[in-house]
Amino acid sequence: MLASEGRTTPGGHPMPSLVEFKDVEKTYRMGTNTVHALAGVNLAIEAGEFVSVIGPSGSGKSTLMHLLGFLDQPSTGTILFEGQDVSKISGRARATIRANRIGFVFQAFYLLPRMTVLQNTLLPLAYSRGEGVGRRVSRMRVKEVLDAVGMADRAHHRPSQLSGGQRQRVAIARALINEPRLILADEPTGNLDSGMAGTIMELFASLNRQGRTVVVVTHDMEIARYSRRWIRVRDGKIAPEEAA
Image 1 (cartoon, one colour):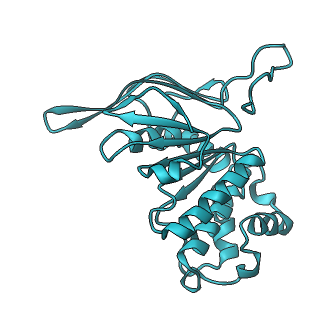
Image 2: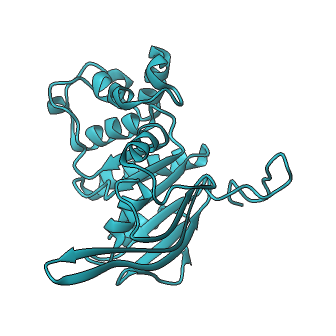
Image 3: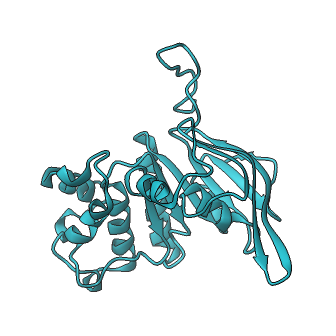
């Protein structure tokens, strides 16, 4: 059962999906041409799900990821986040959602080389606007997230002293520090060998079993098999969904 199934508001109404797209389209102008990156997308991601968004290069999955992570706005259609219409909010409002409610994990890690593991993990707090843990996060919280990814004993190391898998674990800890509602991972195993890729995906699966909502964007079906549901993107549209 999904985490949101059967849950209701105090008024007895069904709980809204964590994220919902309604007839979402995204177009770009390239010279005199209009490119339809997404065309009429409808989907819902429930709290507590583990979902893979899959598709080849050019399919529209990166555009979908940008919209899920509030890195962009739809051209038309509606996006709901926790039941609130966020389709046309300002760039500042999108940044606030990203800083406080979404944890990002990227293929390239994006750790700052001069900062320690501890400092990199704390970095999202610089962009916090007082929601969630914010700047009041305790050292106990930092230790908790580093323990969760098995990196507490590397807290004072710098990225150059870590393996690729260890760097990605730090990136996951950084994504967790503000206790986000959604963890969004974009090709998180792309720079790792197959053995370490499996270890990182098992970590995501463990976080999901703890109740965290995880969305992984990937072109690799071996990676997608770790999730519970697949959303396949083809030519800017959502294909019939598949249970993993």
